[in-house]
Length: 236
Image (spheres, rainbow, N blue to C red):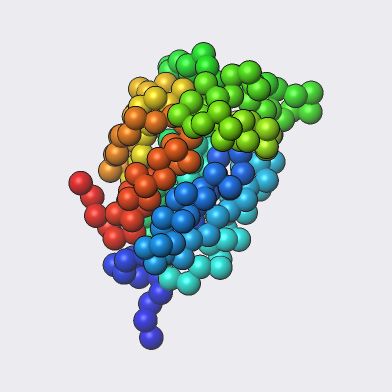
């Protein structure tokens, strides 16, 4: 019988995990591109209520995959895939403008020593959840999207329980799985030094593109190309 979790096989399944403040709909361009190449693409809808809940949502989708799978995370989704990616079906990880904590670290600790650009403004709510500032949303998150597309993301925000950023991870899948990273050079959600430091620390194969934090929506072909290389195990 063929071992469907054999990491030597090219992956034909892709699981996409969105980040904070948005839902999975922004992956549509990447979904369409990879689907046209013959991949089976699934999109996780994170509740953004805790790290554990988002990891559980990711695992539910991973459980539906048959065979080797590439796990992809954007932004906060990087923390989720770092924890969930130890699943034996996962053959590689792709970090798209994504956070990459280590086991025993919480996500907020990654920001220590770096300065987040002033355009990225979180608006905390009384119940502990947070949205992005309506006024700063496009500048901080989606500067290279059209006004209409940025407005849609802004007005369909999914707030995140901000305490999730303080939850320590138990696993770091990048320690045992090969990783790729896509970095937007115009990303205003992260200090550029921070995102490069994370990608280099995990030994990722790095691709840079002139794009905002929403590069998964604004640069779907670039992102899909990197995911395709990860599926085939091709590094630069």
